[in-house]
Length: 303
Ligand code: CP
Ligand code: NVA
Image (cartoon, rainbow, N blue to C red):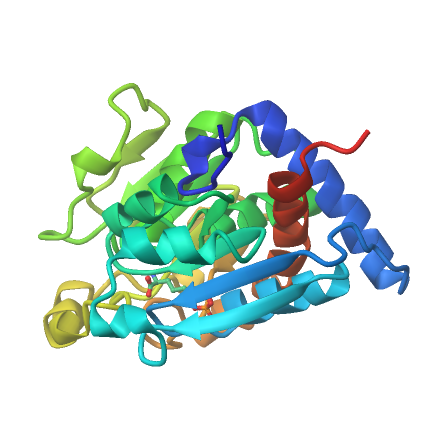
């Protein structure tokens, strides 16, 4: 049975604890310029059907730093853009490499791909999930504040891929998510586990921030939904994370954003560029946690 990371709930708490521990080791070695060549001669194929800066860079640099190689494919330049079935692409790609990362549209596409792959498949973002980002975010929270169990995360903004990965992470790690999305943009209940009691919905974003240990948001218009941008700008008016909202949270609350951000839309410059913001650590930690993730999926637990 091949292990994939297609959504956050694919791993148990034990597996995350292991990956987090490896991430800390890998980060420490990276900072000390110590080699960590656990994936020598291994190859990662990265398939991008949407744009990326952080995801491509962190996976590509990560494989290089572990002694392996990464190959970048996108829809435009590959046969995927000319209608080759994902099932066929998965068969072929997985015979030539050791692990595959995909950024695509519907979750069904990556599920179909994984079902036809001989090697582990990692979700580098779909419309429904962004598990690698939330892995980095939880790692960042723990690094800054210790255990996340029992803490409160305020999600302010769109009901998007990041939110659904946060809701899954809340179940695994035992924290709570206060969610506030504008009217007309509710949580899609088909993407939330029926037994998930780790979240509360608030009509007003300021109320969702009360006593939060972490306030987080994301773009109002995700990739693939660009034609909705004008309507969303109107509907999301009032959902900006600004200093007034941060003041409702704990005085030592952190601010996170997966980036790229739009200052003056979902977040005020005073917050993202302010002292509570850990967005640059969050971005850097993509590198460290994904190296640990790649290592775990390709060679398993190292004793
Ligand atoms: N946060 C994130 O996934 O960034 P990219 O879109 O630049 O990869
Ligand atoms: N929700 C955003 C995240 C980008 C990293 C999107 O899907 O475009």
